[in-house]
Length: 255
Image (cartoon, rainbow, N blue to C red; front, side, top):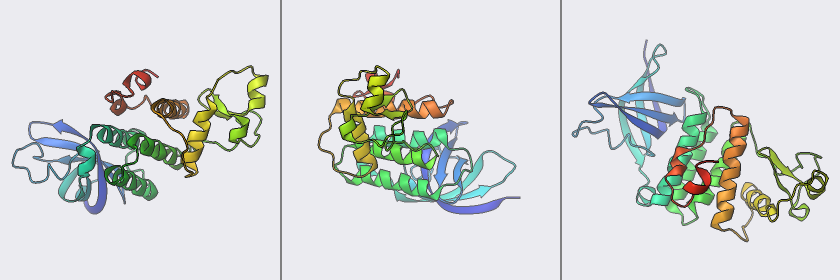
């Protein structure tokens, strides 16, 4: 027996299916991630293909049947298509990366309204603000880690549990967290200037003003977060969306 679902959704992914249809991955407010088919979505006269498009924030009506893996989209209306994102290559890259992150990690039917709201919020910020989209992506990544149960610990040394501060010059300890200056000396770890990464991530996590940032520091933060998530989720292989960004493809692709 089918039931009708009416909910808000973000279109995370879409692929061609048959000669005329599309299969899309939606992150919905009320039902979590749903895979659904848009019948006739590839036809030139399809009224819904431009509405159910990648990144779009929509209201969708779905016929859901528990016995099938792919549900059926009945209709959809557009809230926002984020035009400023789609007209800017860098914004598009990081918006795609946000959607890919959610799509790859969340299971079908896994509901998290706070994550949905965070997804809508970060896309709106990328669309409306002049803030660096890579930094917005990192902010979302930190929030994302907390919501999936792997919050980044920037409060305590990974080895001795001493409270961390910028004065202790914390540096990354593998892909697990950060360690203090004393533990660095004890374990003979030498990482010159990598305490900048701790300060950068700590400011973003705690919503403090950034005094200094450059492309290299942003790249280091993204590398660290990707490896941190890999360390906790064996099946996570990275984000293909970032590989097309010419600013970071060389530094992130093969991490």
